[in-house]
Every structure is written in C-alpha cells, then in structure tokens.
Image (cartoon, rainbow, N blue to C red; front, side):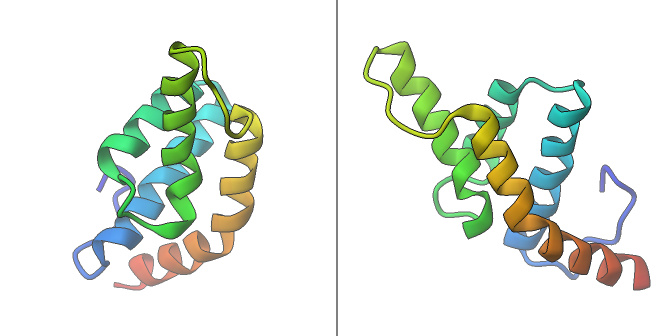
Length: 101
C-alpha cells in the first residue's frame, strides 16, 4: 500500500518481497539504514517469509550475533546487493501485475 499498489490479490510472501525491495532501495538512496532494514525484515518477513528475502533476515541475525562478539555471516552491503540482484525480476513482475489491476 505504501507504494499505492493493489496488493489485495498478492500472497503475503509476494507483498513482503515487494516491501523488502522498496525498503532496500531506500537504503541505496540513503533514507534508511541497512541495520533498520535488517531488523524490519526479521520482524515482518521472518524466517518463514519469502525465500528471496531470507538474506535480509539472516543479516539481522548476523547483526545480533555481532553484538555478542560471535558474528558470522554476510557483509551488510553484499547481502543488500545480493537481495536486489535476486529479487529485481520477480519484483518487476509483481509491479506489472499490481498496476494492471
């Protein structure tokens, strides 16, 4: 809804992917911190959410682990780039479908 799209016919996972992509673009634009994106993904997408967004959820796990000094996991910007690369085609399809409704 934030983007003014018809999301009623989307699955929850598709809506999560679309929202995650939107927020990831905000990180690239400098209007959202990557740590905030990761925390949002963990809260909203969760480990059960869209498979393409799991790297963002796992990034939050890595941030949490780093706080305790036992960080292992993806570098933040690499995780963001990997997500955008993996999700862009699917997001385009979702946007086309949503705009056609």
